Image (cartoon, rainbow, N blue to C red):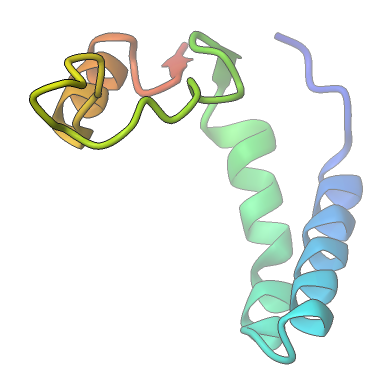
Length: 93
């Protein structure tokens, strides 16, 4: 899969997202994220070779809490096993 953005563009997006998070939440790890933006961009854009997602981007709707009348619930361990078998959402190439 060919990268569509440069490391510089990805690093800028990381900084912008962290800045927005810090403003909305009245604080955050702004300096740490901004100083690591290039390294994170390089990792995800060049070094890791992350493939296309193998699971849907949105989780299933909440099926309710476990009970005698609700047999359709999904526990976290079931979700983890499903994600594990599917390759943790991504295939590493």
